[in-house]
Image 1 (spheres, rainbow, N blue to C red):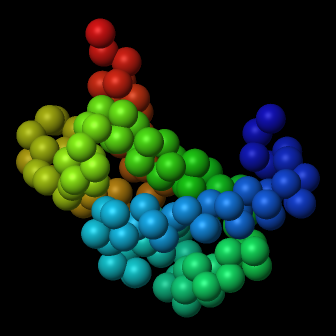
Image 2: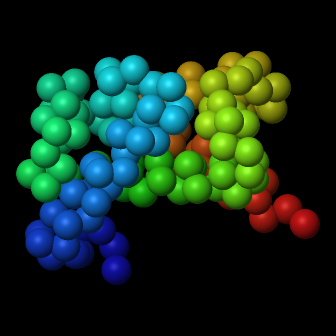
Length: 131
């Protein structure tokens, strides 16, 4: 069932669970608080409020989609690179593939567009699917 078709209560529970997890991921990736807010698509003050009180977070379908993509990126990195330091630093390292053109994947993610989260997720999923 698509996120927008879930009940408000279900979305609230999903949002709270995501906000309990996301600060750990953002710290693992070495993000500043403002960068973590940007990836989530919210102002810094909203991110701080949601981080402090995950049960009170009101993530809409866009935020939940972003969170799903972020969690997928995190998971796939840890499947591809079992060493946590390597997995967490991959996003920060320059990448020579045409998709990143010598920039780090995080630079692309920090454009703030949900489409860039999707592109990075697809790139990693394709790499994981290789024999």
